Length: 173
Image (cartoon, rainbow, N blue to C red; front, side, top):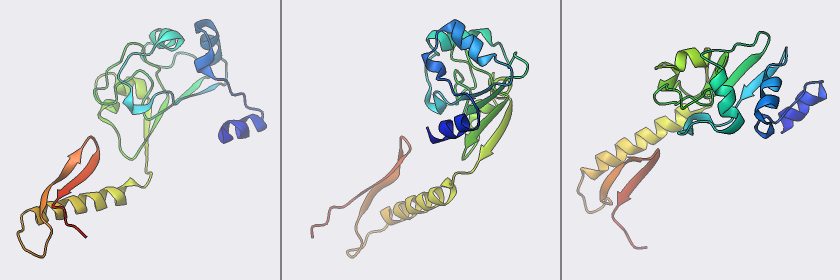
């Protein structure tokens, strides 16, 4: 909201595209000089777009067709599967896709390259955390192989659904 207010303060227009019907949405994204920021769904989308967005995505083809309109997607263009690079029905192509931490497979597979435009990957500081989590997992797996009366028994350590876990002996006190 703060960035939208700052943009409006220098004369930029901000419009909530999700609230528009199909004709109004088509007009809004075709305005000369417009900058369309597609940050609707991100990488977790697993279903086709619906409503006016689906109609707009179906009309777009494989790339931005309106001269003078710049489109930036956040993570992946809406309607693109981040895992497979396939369209989930209609998709909103971008001139530039900005993703975070690492590129996703869908940026390079199937329809991804045509829909993403230029790809920019930005570091958000996950590297040290992932390294520490990996180190903790390796240490827990090493501890699971040890048997000593002064070391808590580690039964299992790993990752499930993106979360790290460690199952160990319960020690009172």
